[in-house]
Image (cartoon, rainbow, N blue to C red; front, top):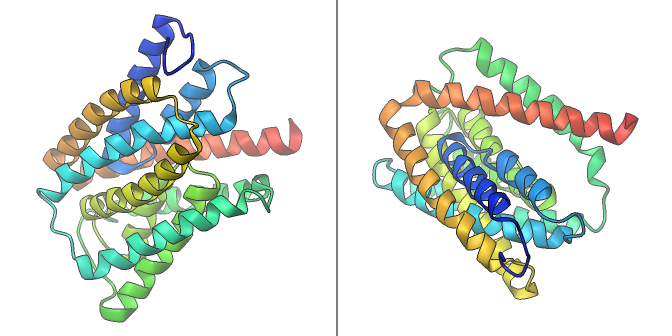
Length: 265
């Protein structure tokens, strides 16, 4: 029995293992949802409501992100005058994105996002020095406006579709602002924590969370998040860049598959 569902012990163990891996990947560069959410879709009974799956997914994600954020903040210095517009607009964007799920068909957005992911992935791959050193391009109100824009855009994605949120934060913070990968990962964790907490409160109110399973997976995600953040801080920007390219590749494959299934499946 896991959070009100009768699940085989092996299924629970595999879900917990997937959550640990998701926490590690998410802490390094984002994209842990590409592991955890599909695992829940496969592991839970086919008649499990989508809201329950999404809600249960958010609980371990929030726990792992909280741990990773705390680990980063002990080492990485955050410029809060630039961070607050990112966090505020990420929360607003996430809420707005959630409302869009009732108005717009999300499948039309997937090909556009796929194009953006492939473009950024190739650009990063072809620019070996990108993100290895901080080359901040903007300051003052200009920087704050761009941070707010990043928060709004990625926040909408998080509320509207979800997986890859942390990766998109890193992509934009490196390419638009000029932060290195470590600083971008730290800021991405803060922003993702904001969107996760907001969604988690909403799901808790509606009673969709499978608490037993979610907390079990959360404990594993928490450990994975801590170890992932430590690995990133210890090994540096070069290591984060390599993991980033792997995750972007996985995200591109998933989005390409979703596009094929939508239009030709």
